[in-house]
Amino acid sequence: MCAKCVFFHAGVVVAVAMLLMGVVMAPRVLAVSQTWYLTDDVASGPFVQGGTAGDRYMKKVFPGGEPDSVVFQGNQDAYWYAAESTSMDLSFSNEGWGTAINWSASGHGNRGWLTVEIVKVDDLGGIVVMATQSLKIPKNPDSGILEFNLSGTGFTDFSVANGDRLAFHVLSSTTGNKTISMHFNSMSYSSTIVTPNTDPGYPVPDVAAWAMFAAGLGLVGFVLVILGKKKRIRFRDQRPKD
Image (cartoon, rainbow, N blue to C red; front, side, top):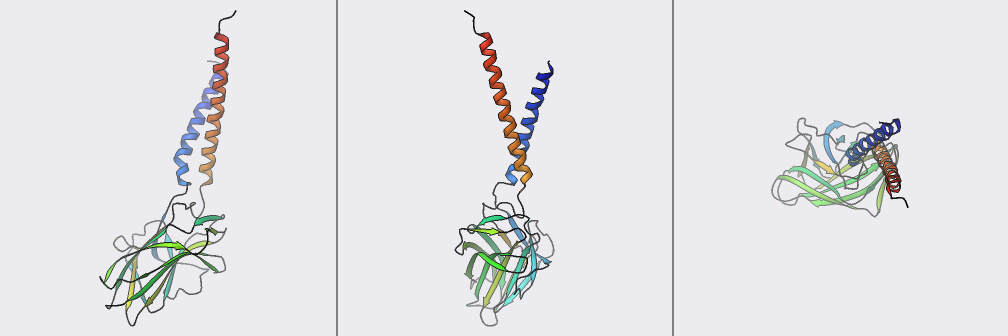
């Protein structure tokens, strides 16, 4: 086999390999929802002013630790922060956010409300609310899962600038001496946040996967062009001569 043929076939193999790797890796950077788990790990600042019931981390890895709880009475709030800030500007939809709160309550009758918010926090502790919802705490039973489907606050989308981080804010408004306990950090008692299916891949998309995918497509296209030229030349050479 001639040297040019060897080089050409090697190029074909490389192009196909890069394309396959891109196909495998690209879904990681395509917009897809992610699940965040609320943990009992104490967060580091900068913090938003508030957090009367504590500041903790939310993580994309299931915590699997010992169960923990936050007990709300009256008007109190708590924050869960992403451990990492973004390393590039990201844009999120303000629709399609879901939250499941594992809860239990004391007292009967009217118990009050829980409000949840998806927010971004800048490096000075400034806050912008992206999506929110308030739900009335059920009178019965005394425990369960409270599911929120958050809606936007007027923005078409939500930009998280380089250096900002996502956070989850829970606010209580209970009545009288009634309390609401919010449970998290374990398999049996977990509370979660699910991002929209337009999530760009917080904290940063895998740009390398896109580059691999694009390079593979480019090489395959180049190979197809060369093959097309070879076929045309072969066809022309094989035509009967007058």
